[in-house]
Amino acid sequence: MWRRRFSTSSGSSDVFGTLTKKKWDAVVIGGGHNGLTAAAYLARGGLSVAVIERRHVIGGAAVTEELVPGFRFSRCSYLQSLLRPSVIRELELGKHGLKLLKRNPSSFTPCLDGRYLLLGPDQELNHSEISKFSRLDADAYPRYEKQLERLCRFMDPLLDVPPPESLHGDTSLNDRLSNKMYKSAFWARCLRQAASLGQKDMVDFMDLLLSPASKVLNNWFESDVLKATLATDAVIGSTASVHTPGSGYVLLHHVMGETDGDRGIWSYVEGGMGSVSMAIGNAAREAGAEIFTNASVSEVLIEDSGNVKGVLLADGTRVDASVVLSNATPYRTFMELVPNNALPNDFVRAIKHSDYSSATTKINLAVDKIPLFRCCNTDHSGPGPEHFGTIHIGAESMEEIHSACQDAENGMPSRRPVIEMTIPSALDTTISPPGKHVINLFIQYTPYKPSDGSWEDPTYREAFAQRCFKLIDEYAPGFSTSIIGYDMLTPPDLEREIGLTGGNIFHGAMGLDSLFLMRPVKGWSNYETPLKGLYLCGSGAHPGGGVMGAPGRNAAHVVLQDLKKIVAQQ
Image (cartoon, rainbow, N blue to C red):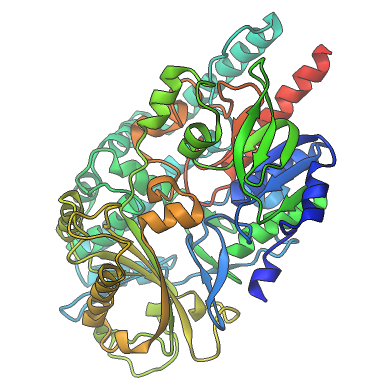
């Protein structure tokens, strides 16, 4: 039932007949949330749009699946905050079924010594909780949050527009003038924002961008538990340590979102993260886009002139289109879907050698009771404040996080993994049977190719899963015995099942050398590619990973502008 609900058109012959009956204005490869976002804006711009999704369900990494009977899992992404307010507002996602469930408290860190730390939007709670570890940190924490908010406001305008990229190839005088004016206005706006921010905050901003997260947090706080809780945002989804230069930006990236206008607040989505993709898909269909599932693209078709002319499906079906947008990773798009020798050698080298490494594993569990944490000394059987937010397991100090990372650098899964546990069913009653719960474990660090075994070995996989469950048992005795069933996605699984090259959840690393004008590679940051008519619209493009919708929205605007120019020249 769940699979049928989250599918659209199937891959039957009559559907393929619909797909091939005409030449589409735009074909979108991949029905992830960014591909659906691009389709919605393109269709609203008056184009005929087809979205082609390989799996039976739309959403990509933002998907809900019933993996254990009666339990609905956000199989990959599991929290919402980064989805751009402009996308929510312009596509009227609330009308299309998006319902956000705010978490308060939003963070819980249990300690083996019997203490714990709760954090959330309640400033009085934060001060009281942090004071248990350090009064100085409790006083500093509001100032820390305010500074991050100021820096996020500085970043905001950069997220919703294409980067000011230089033009390529032969262009008209009007195009060159228009591009020059856009770049001048863009940089003038940045300078005005920098001036309003002030020199001190700009220096702090540069420090945050370039420094290791450990340095940033050590300069603010003294409590190990507080620093470790905040540091997880700096390494989540990456192979980096808290001591890696530039990890401070990833910290900022994960707090720049909002829920219903509240900055930095992460929420669950009723029905799971697939509800985000379904809402965007509904907006796209309402605008006229058509979505096809169980259809895999095997090749981007190119004319002798070098222009894109459509796509070829795995069964040999040809789909003609004026433009093609790829929501696949840059590696998948250019190294696997585009024919050999169709791209410049320097571009191919840059794409091939980009960082797609991953150390992330996701485990989705169905349990028959909610975990009870030893440090809370509670006897209730239902959800309490400690169950609503992200539960940080195995990270009571930044050095523990660093040690876990070092294990992976040596080729082995972390002996004591860093685990972010969430229990969405504590707030969302639609995803599990009464009294039972859905639990997400986001785990680091797990190398793509371990040196001490293989993820293809069932015994090796099970041993690592049990390692994670036993670690949770240290904090919540009896947790392992509550497990009804589970689904585990290691980096190779994420690559095979979801299409994430290397298992990287961001479609490519979020290092300083892979952001803004450097994303996906230098010279091609504005969603266009060396092939005329082929565009990137996924997380491998600016402004990067997470369930943002910004790459899809921005790419669609670029496509509409380019097509408008072509029409004007005819």
